[in-house]
Amino acid sequence: MNKNAKIYVAGHRGLVGSAIWKNLKAKGYDNLIGFSHKELDLCDTNAVNSFFAKEKPEYVFLAAAKVGGIMANNIYRADFIYENLMIQNNIIKASYQNEVKKLLFLGSTCIYPKEAPQPMPESSLLTAPLEYTNEPYAIAKIAGIKMCESYNLQYGTNYISVMPTNLYGPNDNFDLEKSHVLPAMIRKIHLAKALLEGNWKVIEEDINKRPIESSITGNNPKEEIIKTLAKYGIFENKVVLWGTGNPMREFLWSEDMADACVFIMERINFKDTFSSENKEVRNTHINIGTGVDISIRALSELIKETIDYQGKIEFDTTKPDGTMKKLTDPSKLHNLGWRHSVSLEEGVKMIYDYLSLIHI
Image (cartoon, rainbow, N blue to C red):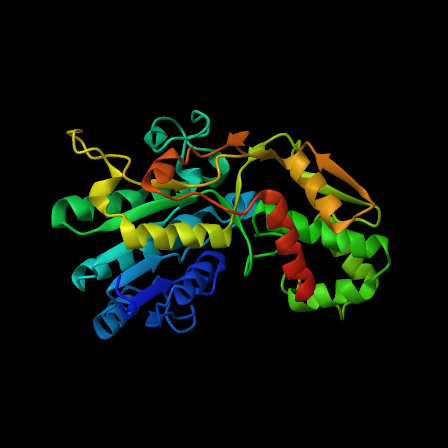
């Protein structure tokens, strides 16, 4: 990519897109395009087509998506499959129609089967049933991979799919109902610490910045706030988390992920993602991960120690665990020349420092 190439980052304000935007800026790319959801509804086919026809981006990072944790994925199943399919279908087709030189589509490692071999290689895609709770989201992302593959094979485009593991970092979603496990856990333990210490200033700042259920803020009566926090497992002397705590998860600092994405966009082409010896072109996507995992219980203890929380952490075993182990095999990316640099211990401290700085 030339430094003055016009680059569109779809979802530039989210966890993934903002990290990519920051990485591109740091590397000297200064012709970046980004629009908020209010400015451009990516589910609106006509709006997307008009945008591409007018702006004519040369490169596209497709980081926009409807995302959430196990609770949100299970409750809003129709929204997750519909919105993600619409976003990626609109952008990929418009990219082809407007002769975009290269596109990077971001998915998720939830595309892999519930009982996939561990660590999960790209070749395990579509080999067994998916985890039920996030099946609609996973199917949408699999469709995105196949759409990129299909356009490449039929039209000679250069669209690459990457599947990051669980991400966390600046601009993450800390909604208690809809966020992913690590940011949700950090916020819960942060609030529990403030509750234990009777620090209502911190609690009020927190929920004024991000109201709970859109209506509970620091202006609500204390009794109502305490009742609402308890609904999400946050009590005066303990935090209650979903499941057994036994599932193993892998986590990647979002800025590491962004660096991998820009590295791939700059240096890797579709032809580099599969063996030319194979008659059938499959599994062209690239895992982005660390290859290292941790149990949810151990993660909660790491967060507890990092923020110096003195209360208890309990697990509600009546709630689902999700997939018991999800560890990526990043050897394909390693062979292409990229490895992560931020450890989980460093990352947890950085994300908590970030939250403390902006008072969540």
